[in-house]
Amino acid sequence: MMKVFCQQECMSKDQIKTLIERHLPDAGPDASLVDTALKGVQLFRVTEAMPCAPAVYEPTVVAILNGTKEAVLDGKHHVYGSDKYLLCPMTLPVEAGTPQASEEDPLLGVVITLDPRLMRELTNEIEAAVGSAKKSHGETPSALALASWDAGFTQALLRLLELLDSPVDLDVLGQGRLRELCYAVLMGEAKADARRAFGIGNEIARTIDYLSAHLKEQVTIDDMADHVGMSRAVFHRRFKEATTMSPIQFIKSMRLNNAAMKIAEGKTVSEAAWDVGYQSPSQFSREFKRMYGQSPRQWSNAAQVPQRLN
Image (cartoon, rainbow, N blue to C red; front, side, top):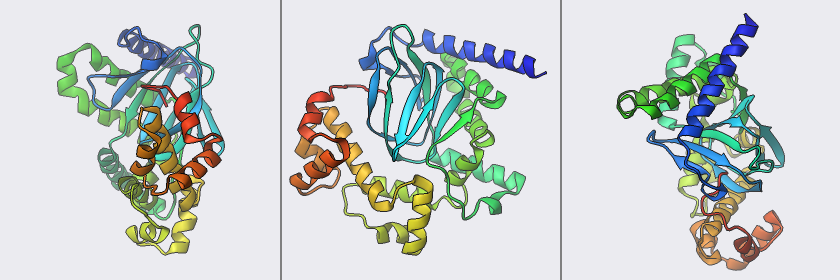
């Protein structure tokens, strides 16, 4: 029985890989992310090694069909390929790259942006059905999780991407198939982390959403704790449990990673600093160099990546 299941899973993955390859244009590494007609679903092919660089992950699932990818959060490396998919249940400042991609062995996969509203709705329905809402209360989600491709996830992803071959099916069934994929994630190996991020006890994820919306403002730990009705001490402890960083470290990483991405996209150093809440250019330069080992101007000269896959 297990052998039959493995054969079926391999066949499904081969079908997914074929679908992705068919819907990707012949493009080089600088145009690796490709939007599809399905909102929130992007395909990618990377044929050149890219060292890890600052990025900000939104709530997403990343599934690899060929090659390996890397995400680094607070010094911890998460390397994954076609055996695991990555779940990022909350907005996070990371470093990400494709250090092993090449023409002979390209990185190939799909990114699905998770709609927090849909994920919360599904989580509430699941917890009501299985009666586990009380169990997850008070726990904190892991910042990044790797989960095995089970039958539910594999088939849901295949059914979702099959819609790319039929515009009519896509228009009629697209949202339903996205819902099916999100359900598979919430029922899969990373279900505890996913449900805690989107269900009862999701205060840390909500705090990060608040911070992301007020990045230019001088948000304090007390502001974030008050936003979710926690004491400063409890909030600090739970925040670090969830993200591996203190709130102050997290805010700084979010600001500097956002600034690095803006500079890579062509903004001036002063514009990028101002956009993420720095009022002192000298302070921004000092903290940027301390974080990345080079000045913002050195980073600007090196980071010529118009549409980088992070």
